[in-house]
Length: 451
Image 1: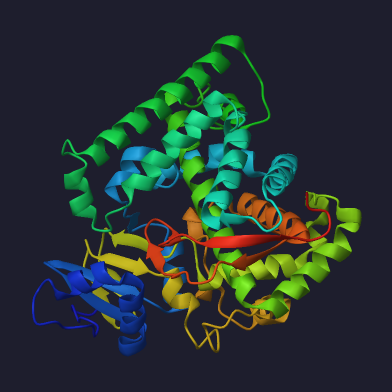
Image 2 (image 1 turned 90 degrees about the vertical axis):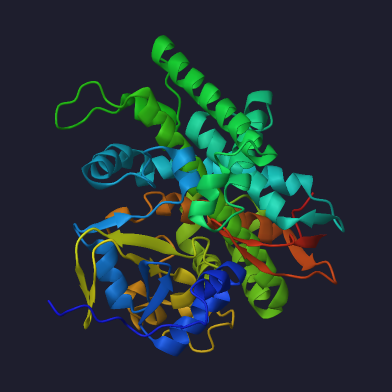
């Protein structure tokens, strides 16, 4: 291996300069750094070496590395998810991924597709012609209802489901207000109102989920949800005991996070982009009107006939990737091109940065779903687009997310057109996912089939 040779990167007058710029405008700072310094950019944050990696081939190698890379997790996320698939490492992660995988087979997702479509109809029934909605809240409510139903067979409208949703929203919504991991870790130890809200919400989540686990175990109940699937798990290598209650709890809350927060963000930004591009909206309406004859709700059998709807969602997740950055820590020295990355460094792979790279997406800020034709996809490196990560840690629920996103978008676009309320300021808030910082208020206009 070559000796340590630092890639180029931004230099500031004060040691904390890079840190403060990242805190102030992380997306803008990372975009500027990538465009100025190239495929590997060194970011000095105190004594720690950090590398922003922007080349699809390097990204692929890092994500598929069989060993030598560890996931870097935000403290508040580790606190919520325990040792679920998002936070666990090594052989423990590989075993759990293998055990959870049956929950996301095509047949299971198809069965859950009926719940996704039904929730789209419930959402549509709440909207009124000429009414004003906060789109982020509406998409969050719909996707949370789907995840609660498919994970633990509870309706979000009943008391348990409502409190479960409120507790989860409190924990996840207040856990990521600080983008500085060590500051967040410190604040979580202080008796602040925010900390007490997190503790109360987390306590309710734990009590409720553990009670559900105990009831299913004691009564031998079988329901069409993730909880029953996890309770049936038996290790193929001979562990007849399956998963412990704590392990099941961690995986349920992991799926709450991965299966709700991300697709909610994707759909929210999709409505925003459609409202700004009437020609794309018209093409989407033409497809869903032609496929969903008579105003019927879509099902999973319709997915192959909704390619443009999927392309719209794909392009939305390119411009506003729900997960906008991935961190890895190399546990041994790692050769990155001509540079030797010392063990203990942090490598950052930003979906937002790579998805806005003009080498792969000419005029990258332009919303153009036709980039996602089979020919367009084949013309680009695979890891120039990675909204669901990649390698052995690629999101296990990717199929679930695509199914839910396309079904909800198709159903609601068939029945409604959304128009932004004038005078709003639309800024991006890059927390766990990309959210509209000030919300996104839109007026609902009924199309055929709407209530």
